Length: 117
Figure 1 (cartoon, helix red, strand yellow):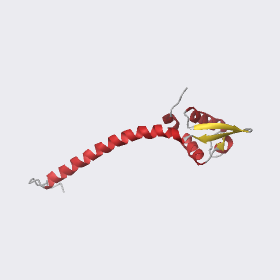
Figure 2 (tube, helix red, strand yellow):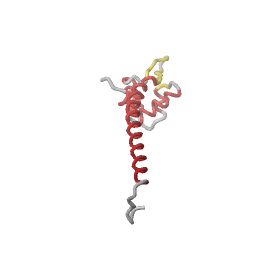
Figure 3 (cartoon, helix red, strand yellow):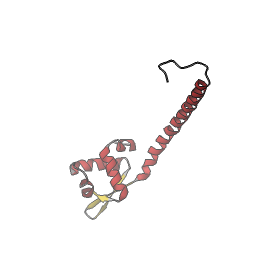
Figure 4 (cartoon, one colour):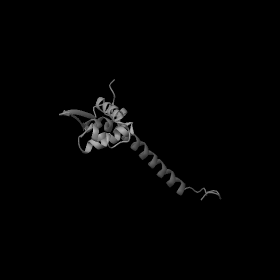
């Protein structure tokens, strides 16, 4: 099954693994030492990260070292950027509307009700 980056970052344990590996490559045992879950559970999380392309595993002697492939986050950044632009334009339009409403109410001859301040 081919997984995507969004599946990988959906899980807090996988995000923590990525954070660890972003600092420096580590072997599976060193990664597992940072968590209270079992080594097989960590291996499962590493497998998912590998399937997503966020982690690569290389063998050095008897050890398997994991390295983060942070370039895959460009996919996430591009997706988020599209919505950041959309929401910024909507919020800017809302801000302009509220400013116009405040200005119109400020110049309005209608007085506020007694319970309004």
